[in-house]
Amino acid sequence: MEDSFKYADLIVKYLREQATPAEQQELQTWLEADVRHQELMASMKDPGTLRAAMAFQDQLDVEGDWQAILARTTPLTVHRNRVWRKVAAWTAAAALLGGIIAVYTWPRSPASDPRVIADNTHTFKNDVLPGGNNATLQLGNGKKVTLGNRVTDSLKEADGTTIGQQTGELVYHKAASSDNESALFNTLSTARAGQYQLTLEDGTKVWLNAASSLKFPVHFGSGERRVELTGEGYFEVNASSARPFKVMVQGMEVLVLGTHFNIGAYGDAVKTTLVSGAVKIQLPGKRSWQLQPGQQAQVQQQQVSITTADMEKAIAWKEGIFFFKDDDFKEIMEQVARWYDLEVQYNGPMPAKRISGNINRQARLSQVLEMLNFVSGANFSINGKKVTVSTKK
Image (cartoon, rainbow, N blue to C red; front, side, top):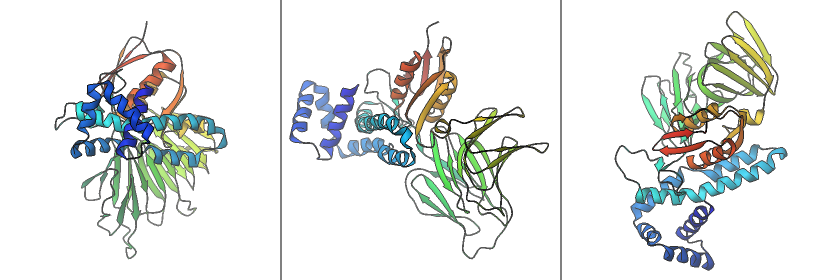
């Protein structure tokens, strides 16, 4: 596989006119070895093909993601980050080659999914690109706006609130002259293979994982600040003792004064992990539990258990990483399926052992499955966006 990455890197340098004479000679040797290589390079002379291929690479902002990850890491994770950086570098190099091959060889139709591409490892029938910054915003009047990576003009709400659009993020700014305290709500939703970031009018920041939504007021009044979450979100709440912040999720309430925490509620269990500050879990009947930093509360069928959290694991998704540590195989595949928008079919029993491993969420699906094959022994096949898992009985 490393040969594919190697020549992908050479092609990237060649296209950017950054290849050294030695690298140019090596690329020439590769071209002369197979007529298909020559046809591929010839196709790149078409500006339309090249722009389309570059578009695949633009979906993978690997370097930007890694800068964000490194800014948040501690010395304890430096070694692991070196491994992850290598995976990210390979992903970036292979992205352009994968995109060019996909544009050049993959059957195109108006209904085709641009994330389904050709597999250049020759291991699978096809490959699938990871999810990215895409979401839908429903405004107060019910109008829906499709969001992506591209920065466009600001949106305006009926009360004068300005909604700024940055790369993968919305930022709410209350109109300076507005004293309207009426309840005007927006909902930000991500589908499978989507994620998005949001800065609320009070300065609170929210990261939404795939298949999640957040309903929130366009601006908060003088009382409590209340939002409703489905799926998974990471919150950095702007502290205000006079205006407590509340997250409603699956019939329970997380009360916040000012803190960093993660809530995951994909199944019938709600996991709240406190990074810093203080939160209180409140259930019907006035039952409540106070969390300390580093603790995780799991609520399932009105039963609450509080344990010491694995912080690196709990917030890995926000940092752009799949991080598995003694995890159930099916739960892992559910995470992968959400991020790549897959249908998963199982042939044979699930791997019984608990799985540990990690990889950048910007990796192509083939790379993730190869890692899972290595740590679990399960075999995988890809057909479009359907993944079949086969295990030995």
